[in-house]
View 1 (cartoon, rainbow, N blue to C red):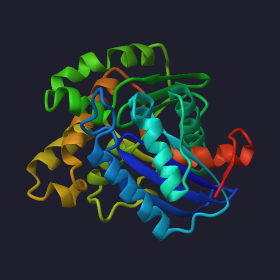
View 2 (view 1 turned 180 degrees about the vertical axis):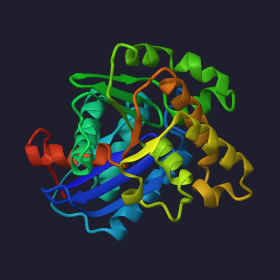
View 3 (view 1 turned 120 degrees about the vertical axis):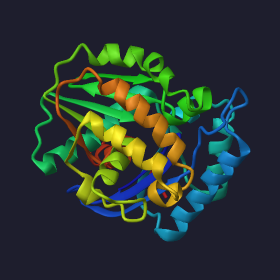
View 4 (view 1 turned 135 degrees about the vertical axis):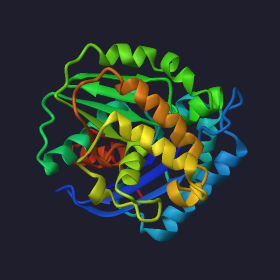
Length: 288
């Protein structure tokens, strides 16, 4: 099965065996929500997305059964349906706009599988997936999608990181209703913070070394300091990612400030969850 996650900042895809083993993985920063306004997706964002999807097709054989999800930026953008139709016509890749709640449930599937492989109990785990334009949080059967992310925060507030407390207020209130034994962090901000903690950069990033790593709140401060001090931020954390990661660190610190449970990082998320949902028959399969 192939799972495609066209997010508000990143395009991620993978092909997976039924036992959860990845055959291949693919990731590109596309900045779908970058500069987005009332008119919808910007032409530059659409160009980046098309380029990345063409690279996906050229690097990996796309054949058989799959599902492609488009997330928060596409839920918001007025021109998203027309653009997704263009992608289907030009590239033969059909992408479906999914709800925030569906996104949260699929992310949880991907995380749960990784936790099982790591031998970490998910019984009382709180999942936080900080995305580009939305944040999905779940605890057991309770899940919710919040209308903020690192790209939308950067669009609205720039480097005014003090605004993070206001932006995260409703999510923090939601989190305060739970008593988790562990907080599992997925998506690019915590995985990058974990990578920086052990001396990895964008080119040397290794998901196998990241999965299951423990983080503390101070690690986000340390990552911010390392990014700000770097003379080559693109090499350290990826092209045009440094400002977004600083926004993301501010948001994560607000979300985690009053949580006493330990933090664990996993690389798995929506694309893996899509594959598991396809294997279980809970998603409608599409055919290349």
